[in-house]
Length: 276
Image (cartoon, rainbow, N blue to C red; front, top):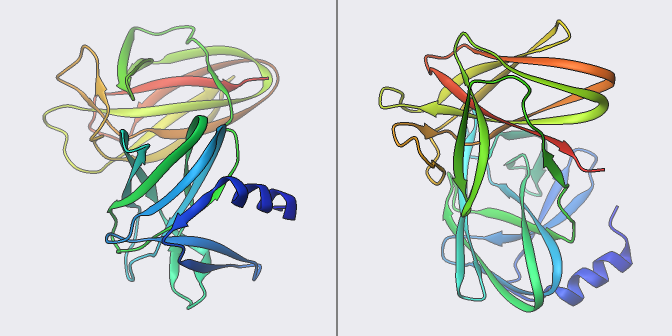
Protein backbone atom coordinates (compact mmCIF):
# COMPACT_ATOMS: atom_id res chain seq x y z
CA UNK A 1 0.00 0.00 0.00
CA UNK A 2 1.31 3.44 -0.89
CA UNK A 3 1.84 5.50 2.25
CA UNK A 4 0.93 9.17 2.53
CA UNK A 5 4.64 10.02 2.82
CA UNK A 6 5.38 8.09 -0.38
CA UNK A 7 2.62 9.94 -2.23
CA UNK A 8 3.86 13.28 -0.98
CA UNK A 9 7.43 12.47 -2.07
CA UNK A 10 6.17 11.28 -5.45
CA UNK A 11 4.28 14.48 -6.19
CA UNK A 12 7.14 16.62 -4.92
CA UNK A 13 9.40 15.07 -7.57
CA UNK A 14 6.87 14.54 -10.35
CA UNK A 15 6.18 18.19 -11.01
CA UNK A 16 3.68 19.85 -13.33
CA UNK A 17 2.12 16.85 -15.05
CA UNK A 18 0.15 18.15 -18.01
CA UNK A 19 -2.61 17.67 -18.90
CA UNK A 20 -3.61 16.48 -15.41
CA UNK A 21 -6.81 14.65 -16.31
CA UNK A 22 -7.45 11.98 -13.70
CA UNK A 23 -9.31 8.74 -14.35
CA UNK A 24 -10.56 6.32 -11.71
CA UNK A 25 -10.02 2.58 -12.11
CA UNK A 26 -11.98 0.11 -10.00
CA UNK A 27 -10.33 -3.13 -8.85
CA UNK A 28 -12.47 -6.16 -8.01
CA UNK A 29 -11.88 -5.38 -4.31
CA UNK A 30 -13.65 -2.03 -4.94
CA UNK A 31 -10.36 -0.22 -4.34
CA UNK A 32 -9.92 2.67 -6.75
CA UNK A 33 -6.69 3.93 -8.26
CA UNK A 34 -6.06 7.12 -10.18
CA UNK A 35 -4.48 7.01 -13.64
CA UNK A 36 -3.53 9.82 -15.99
CA UNK A 37 -5.23 9.92 -19.41
CA UNK A 38 -2.98 9.70 -22.46
CA UNK A 39 -4.65 10.30 -25.84
CA UNK A 40 -3.39 10.84 -29.37
CA UNK A 41 -3.95 14.60 -29.23
CA UNK A 42 -2.89 15.10 -25.60
CA UNK A 43 0.59 13.85 -24.59
CA UNK A 44 1.55 13.72 -20.92
CA UNK A 45 4.53 15.80 -19.75
CA UNK A 46 6.27 15.78 -16.37
CA UNK A 47 9.54 16.56 -14.60
CA UNK A 48 11.54 14.17 -12.43
CA UNK A 49 14.60 14.91 -10.32
CA UNK A 50 17.23 12.17 -10.42
CA UNK A 51 19.06 10.00 -9.99
CA UNK A 52 16.17 7.61 -9.46
CA UNK A 53 14.03 4.98 -11.15
CA UNK A 54 10.47 5.70 -12.20
CA UNK A 55 8.11 2.86 -13.05
CA UNK A 56 5.29 3.67 -15.45
CA UNK A 57 2.21 1.45 -15.15
CA UNK A 58 -0.09 1.39 -18.17
CA UNK A 59 -3.52 0.07 -19.08
CA UNK A 60 -5.66 0.61 -22.12
CA UNK A 61 -9.40 0.78 -22.58
CA UNK A 62 -10.33 -2.62 -23.94
CA UNK A 63 -12.16 -2.74 -27.28
CA UNK A 64 -15.51 -4.47 -26.92
CA UNK A 65 -15.95 -7.96 -28.39
CA UNK A 66 -12.19 -8.34 -28.84
CA UNK A 67 -10.47 -11.59 -27.89
CA UNK A 68 -6.81 -12.47 -27.46
CA UNK A 69 -3.82 -10.23 -26.89
CA UNK A 70 -3.62 -6.64 -28.11
CA UNK A 71 -0.58 -4.46 -28.78
CA UNK A 72 -0.21 -0.79 -27.94
CA UNK A 73 2.73 1.61 -28.20
CA UNK A 74 3.89 4.83 -26.58
CA UNK A 75 6.79 7.16 -27.33
CA UNK A 76 8.96 8.31 -24.43
CA UNK A 77 10.88 11.56 -24.96
CA UNK A 78 13.60 12.65 -22.51
CA UNK A 79 14.79 16.27 -22.33
CA UNK A 80 13.59 16.79 -25.93
CA UNK A 81 16.66 14.83 -27.14
CA UNK A 82 16.33 11.08 -26.60
CA UNK A 83 13.29 9.23 -27.89
CA UNK A 84 12.27 5.58 -27.83
CA UNK A 85 9.20 3.61 -28.85
CA UNK A 86 7.89 1.29 -26.14
CA UNK A 87 5.78 -1.66 -27.32
CA UNK A 88 3.44 -3.31 -24.81
CA UNK A 89 1.17 -6.32 -25.14
CA UNK A 90 -1.72 -7.16 -22.85
CA UNK A 91 -4.95 -9.12 -22.44
CA UNK A 92 -8.35 -8.15 -21.12
CA UNK A 93 -8.43 -7.95 -17.32
CA UNK A 94 -11.03 -10.14 -15.63
CA UNK A 95 -10.99 -8.12 -12.40
CA UNK A 96 -10.55 -4.48 -13.39
CA UNK A 97 -12.81 -1.90 -15.05
CA UNK A 98 -13.09 1.87 -15.04
CA UNK A 99 -15.63 3.80 -12.98
CA UNK A 100 -18.10 3.62 -15.86
CA UNK A 101 -17.90 -0.16 -15.91
CA UNK A 102 -15.90 -0.39 -19.14
CA UNK A 103 -13.35 -3.21 -19.44
CA UNK A 104 -9.62 -2.51 -19.22
CA UNK A 105 -6.49 -4.43 -20.09
CA UNK A 106 -4.20 -6.02 -17.55
CA UNK A 107 -1.52 -3.59 -16.46
CA UNK A 108 1.85 -3.51 -18.15
CA UNK A 109 4.81 -1.38 -17.12
CA UNK A 110 8.20 -0.01 -18.12
CA UNK A 111 11.03 1.70 -16.23
CA UNK A 112 12.67 5.07 -16.71
CA UNK A 113 16.26 5.32 -15.49
CA UNK A 114 16.31 9.00 -14.51
CA UNK A 115 19.78 10.62 -14.56
CA UNK A 116 21.04 13.14 -12.04
CA UNK A 117 19.40 16.57 -12.02
CA UNK A 118 16.01 17.79 -13.20
CA UNK A 119 14.75 15.98 -16.31
CA UNK A 120 11.81 16.69 -18.59
CA UNK A 121 9.76 13.84 -20.03
CA UNK A 122 6.93 13.53 -22.50
CA UNK A 123 4.85 10.40 -23.17
CA UNK A 124 3.01 10.31 -26.50
CA UNK A 125 0.31 7.95 -27.69
CA UNK A 126 1.66 6.09 -30.73
CA UNK A 127 -0.95 3.40 -31.34
CA UNK A 128 -3.59 1.31 -29.56
CA UNK A 129 -6.91 -0.37 -30.41
CA UNK A 130 -8.69 2.47 -28.56
CA UNK A 131 -7.71 6.12 -28.43
CA UNK A 132 -6.99 6.14 -24.69
CA UNK A 133 -4.09 4.74 -22.67
CA UNK A 134 -3.95 5.11 -18.88
CA UNK A 135 -0.71 5.93 -17.01
CA UNK A 136 0.30 5.69 -13.35
CA UNK A 137 3.72 6.51 -11.89
CA UNK A 138 5.64 4.94 -9.01
CA UNK A 139 9.20 5.19 -7.71
CA UNK A 140 10.42 1.60 -7.96
CA UNK A 141 13.76 0.09 -8.85
CA UNK A 142 13.76 -2.77 -11.37
CA UNK A 143 14.77 -6.22 -10.23
CA UNK A 144 18.38 -7.02 -10.96
CA UNK A 145 18.68 -10.07 -13.17
CA UNK A 146 22.02 -11.69 -13.93
CA UNK A 147 22.75 -13.71 -17.09
CA UNK A 148 23.80 -17.30 -16.50
CA UNK A 149 25.43 -19.51 -19.17
CA UNK A 150 23.91 -22.63 -20.67
CA UNK A 151 25.78 -25.86 -19.98
CA UNK A 152 25.22 -27.64 -23.31
CA UNK A 153 24.29 -25.91 -26.56
CA UNK A 154 25.26 -25.73 -30.25
CA UNK A 155 24.90 -22.12 -31.36
CA UNK A 156 25.13 -18.67 -29.80
CA UNK A 157 23.18 -15.88 -31.48
CA UNK A 158 23.41 -12.18 -30.58
CA UNK A 159 20.67 -9.55 -30.63
CA UNK A 160 20.98 -5.78 -30.75
CA UNK A 161 18.64 -4.34 -28.12
CA UNK A 162 18.66 -0.64 -27.23
CA UNK A 163 22.21 -0.32 -28.58
CA UNK A 164 23.37 -3.31 -26.48
CA UNK A 165 24.53 -6.68 -27.77
CA UNK A 166 22.94 -9.55 -25.82
CA UNK A 167 23.77 -13.26 -26.10
CA UNK A 168 21.08 -15.90 -26.66
CA UNK A 169 21.32 -19.65 -27.18
CA UNK A 170 19.68 -20.99 -30.34
CA UNK A 171 17.42 -23.98 -29.73
CA UNK A 172 16.64 -25.84 -32.95
CA UNK A 173 13.79 -28.29 -33.46
CA UNK A 174 14.74 -31.79 -32.42
CA UNK A 175 17.66 -30.52 -30.31
CA UNK A 176 18.15 -29.51 -26.67
CA UNK A 177 19.71 -26.64 -24.78
CA UNK A 178 20.75 -27.75 -21.30
CA UNK A 179 21.21 -25.70 -18.16
CA UNK A 180 22.59 -27.07 -14.90
CA UNK A 181 22.23 -24.97 -11.74
CA UNK A 182 21.48 -25.23 -8.03
CA UNK A 183 18.45 -24.00 -6.09
CA UNK A 184 16.59 -22.59 -4.40
CA UNK A 185 16.28 -19.75 -6.87
CA UNK A 186 13.99 -18.29 -9.53
CA UNK A 187 15.00 -18.79 -13.15
CA UNK A 188 13.84 -16.36 -15.81
CA UNK A 189 13.85 -17.60 -19.39
CA UNK A 190 13.52 -15.06 -22.22
CA UNK A 191 12.40 -16.67 -25.47
CA UNK A 192 12.36 -15.20 -29.00
CA UNK A 193 11.00 -17.34 -31.84
CA UNK A 194 13.08 -17.02 -35.00
CA UNK A 195 11.20 -15.81 -38.08
CA UNK A 196 12.52 -16.66 -41.54
CA UNK A 197 11.16 -15.57 -44.92
CA UNK A 198 8.44 -18.25 -44.81
CA UNK A 199 7.10 -17.43 -41.34
CA UNK A 200 4.46 -14.70 -41.19
CA UNK A 201 2.05 -13.13 -38.69
CA UNK A 202 1.35 -14.18 -35.11
CA UNK A 203 2.78 -17.55 -34.12
CA UNK A 204 2.14 -20.05 -31.33
CA UNK A 205 4.82 -22.35 -29.96
CA UNK A 206 5.55 -24.53 -26.96
CA UNK A 207 8.69 -24.48 -24.86
CA UNK A 208 9.18 -27.82 -23.10
CA UNK A 209 11.25 -27.84 -19.89
CA UNK A 210 12.50 -31.15 -18.47
CA UNK A 211 13.71 -30.50 -14.91
CA UNK A 212 15.24 -33.72 -13.55
CA UNK A 213 12.65 -35.65 -15.61
CA UNK A 214 9.76 -33.47 -14.37
CA UNK A 215 8.32 -32.05 -17.60
CA UNK A 216 6.42 -28.79 -17.96
CA UNK A 217 5.07 -27.27 -21.17
CA UNK A 218 4.80 -23.51 -21.63
CA UNK A 219 2.52 -22.34 -24.47
CA UNK A 220 3.56 -18.97 -25.89
CA UNK A 221 2.26 -16.60 -28.56
CA UNK A 222 4.42 -14.07 -30.36
CA UNK A 223 4.78 -11.71 -33.29
CA UNK A 224 7.76 -10.54 -35.35
CA UNK A 225 9.71 -7.83 -33.55
CA UNK A 226 9.72 -4.43 -35.22
CA UNK A 227 12.69 -3.09 -33.27
CA UNK A 228 15.06 -5.97 -32.40
CA UNK A 229 17.52 -7.50 -34.88
CA UNK A 230 20.19 -10.17 -34.86
CA UNK A 231 23.75 -9.01 -35.20
CA UNK A 232 25.10 -11.50 -37.74
CA UNK A 233 22.04 -13.46 -38.90
CA UNK A 234 20.21 -11.18 -41.32
CA UNK A 235 18.14 -14.09 -42.67
CA UNK A 236 16.40 -14.39 -39.28
CA UNK A 237 14.21 -11.90 -37.41
CA UNK A 238 13.52 -12.41 -33.68
CA UNK A 239 10.02 -12.31 -32.27
CA UNK A 240 9.03 -10.12 -29.36
CA UNK A 241 10.38 -11.40 -26.05
CA UNK A 242 8.27 -13.83 -24.04
CA UNK A 243 9.18 -14.65 -20.44
CA UNK A 244 8.66 -17.76 -18.37
CA UNK A 245 9.63 -18.09 -14.72
CA UNK A 246 10.68 -21.34 -13.04
CA UNK A 247 10.96 -21.70 -9.27
CA UNK A 248 13.75 -24.16 -8.52
CA UNK A 249 13.76 -26.00 -5.22
CA UNK A 250 16.87 -26.70 -3.17
CA UNK A 251 19.41 -28.96 -4.81
CA UNK A 252 20.91 -29.41 -8.26
CA UNK A 253 18.74 -29.19 -11.36
CA UNK A 254 19.44 -30.32 -14.91
CA UNK A 255 17.03 -28.48 -17.17
CA UNK A 256 16.65 -29.56 -20.79
CA UNK A 257 14.77 -27.20 -23.12
CA UNK A 258 13.12 -28.26 -26.38
CA UNK A 259 10.82 -26.65 -28.95
CA UNK A 260 7.50 -27.95 -30.33
CA UNK A 261 4.11 -26.83 -31.61
CA UNK A 262 5.37 -24.55 -34.38
CA UNK A 263 6.55 -24.59 -37.98
CA UNK A 264 9.43 -22.32 -36.97
CA UNK A 265 12.78 -24.07 -37.03
CA UNK A 266 14.31 -22.50 -33.93
CA UNK A 267 13.91 -20.25 -30.90
CA UNK A 268 16.52 -18.16 -29.08
CA UNK A 269 16.79 -18.43 -25.29
CA UNK A 270 18.40 -16.29 -22.62
CA UNK A 271 18.71 -17.39 -18.97
CA UNK A 272 18.79 -15.12 -15.93
CA UNK A 273 18.51 -15.36 -12.14
CA UNK A 274 17.66 -12.69 -9.57
CA UNK A 275 20.70 -11.00 -8.11
CA UNK A 276 21.10 -11.66 -4.40
